[in-house]
Image (cartoon, rainbow, N blue to C red; front, top):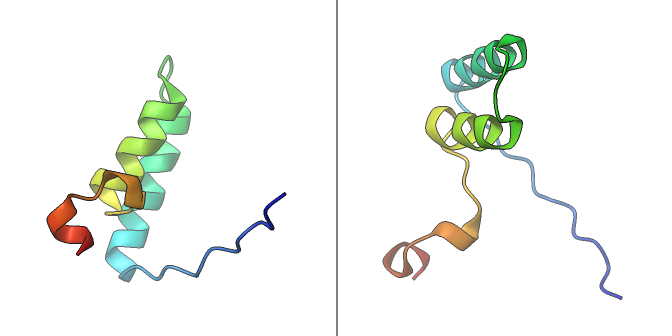
Length: 61
């Protein structure tokens, strides 16, 4: 069994953090919605936070 990895801290500009937080709160209050899609969209589109698995080969190099 592999040991779990502890993610590195990620720091965002205060404005980006505030926008991401506001979007997540808005999504929580919006019904009905698909929570997984909403969170992925907020993280990526508002926070610029993406998993490495979606990086283009050119970006990864």
